[in-house]
Every structure is written in structure tokens, then in C-alpha cells.
Image (cartoon, rainbow, N blue to C red; front, side):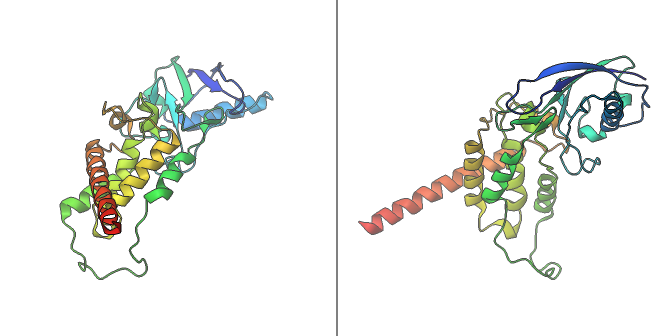
Amino acid sequence: MRVRLKVWRQKNGSTPGEFKTYESPDLNPNMSFLEMLDVLNEQLAGRGEEPIAFDHDCREGICGTCSLVLNGKPHGPHRGVATCQTYMRSFQDGQEIVVEPFRAAAFPPIKDLVVDRKAFDKIIQAGGFISARTGSAPDANSIPVAKENADLAMDAAECIGCGACVAACKNASAMLFVAAKVSHLGLLPQGQPERQRRALAMVQAMDEAGFGNCTVTGSCEAVCPKSIPIDFIARLNRDFGLGLIRGEARRKKTAEGGA
């Protein structure tokens, strides 16, 4: 099979970009989309042209590095898979495929299809950790955890931080990402000491990074490669609200004590 690719090319973040059209060589329908880009880049290099820059690492839907918008949808036409798990058999022979990077003010372009997602790292640094002592594994059942909570925590922990939720959101909100990170720690006993403080700190970091507000359209859930539900956003909002209430109560108590 062959496809026509309309690819976003941009030399760097300070240079305007544009779409360029390429005709692919003959392709195996069973190769992944990233393997197809490898083949195209070999062809470009053979002609002395600049290869297309794109992010990739594990190519198994684990690392969250691959971050492409294919025909207007982050990660491609299927639900619950990353770009690296999208295969050429998902497209028609001769089809035109528009390939773009994730677009958001908080994800500035670096080159071609590569964007800078350090904003996610700053959010994690603000509160994505626990103060509980780590070390040797505890005895089994020493800290009972309800199965429902354990399952929900594992569901939230599946987030790979790819940024598809941001790319799909009309407001470029990172609420699903933040909600998943807050929830998978807050649902377990070890994450309780910082629960409300974590929500406050990570939401503040999200706002400072330039992400937009959540209006609960559900577009984030629809494109998430791990199918993380927006139910976790409700949990984040609850922890955030409790954090505000308790913070205000502490400030009031401090003020009264000082008076």
C-alpha cells in the first residue's frame, strides 16, 4: 500500500512551520505508523533531504513519548491506543494522512513533530510524590486497602503522561493528567498525608504552566490511550475543594491565635 502524507515541518520553535506533502514508498500494511515514518525518513535521507523529527521510545504504548495528531485526532483513529500502536492497515490505500504535533501553548514546538512537554514534569514535581518511607517491601496485608480503591488507583496509575488529553481539549486543559496523578496516590493509605496539599500544588503548577480550564467536554477521555475516565476529575475537584477549605480554616485559626 501507499499513502500520501501531509506533514508539519518546522525548523525550530522560533521559525514558522508549514505542511509539506510526501508520497510514501510501498508499505507493509502491518507496520506501525512510526515504522512507516522510519521508512519515509530513510527515503528522505537517501535523497539528501532533512528527515522528519518525531518523538519515540518504547514503541509499546508504555512510555507516552509518541505524540502525533493523525487526521485531527491525537494518536490516530482508534480508541485506547498510542500512535506507536496504530498500524498502517488502519488507513486506506492511497489515503492522505495529515500528521501534526500536539498543539498547546504549554507544549511549545521544538522541531517538526516534537514538542516540549516539560510542563508535565513541573506538575509532577509540585506534588506527585508521597512522604511515606520507602525501602523494603512491607509485610503482606499490613496496610489493608479496599479492593475497589486498589483497582481505582491502578486505573489512574495507567496514565503515561503523553499529553493527548491536552491536545484534544479545546481549552488545552491538563485536568485529566493531573486528576490521574492525584488520584492514584490519594486513593492509597501511603498518599493520605499530602492528599489535599497535593491537589492544591499540582493544580497551581498546572495553571502556572499555561494550561486552560476544564469544561468537562469529555474529549480528553475519548483520546486517552489508556482510556482513563473523567470520573477522576471529580475526585481531583473534591480534594482541591477540601484543600482550600482546610487551608482557609488554618489561616483563620492562625489569625485568631495571633490576635
